[in-house]
Length: 60
Image (cartoon, rainbow, N blue to C red; front, top):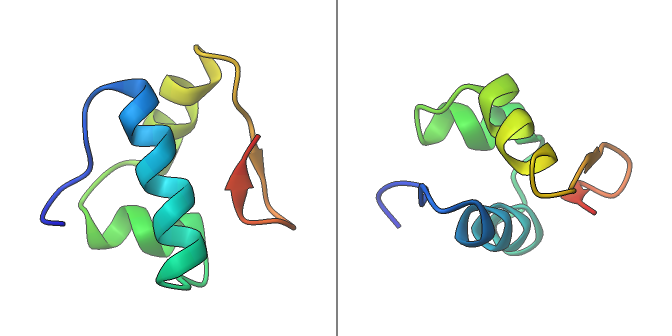
């Protein structure tokens, strides 16, 4: 994967998969790898009802 999707649902799925499967240490590391702003990603996913759970490393 070269970049993260723009569509919020696809973004949600991609981030949760990448955190689970590639074992990024944090959302910050993942966003840095794909040159995305962490706060913007969180805001985008919050608009569709998902918040980041730091302990579980996933949006729920």
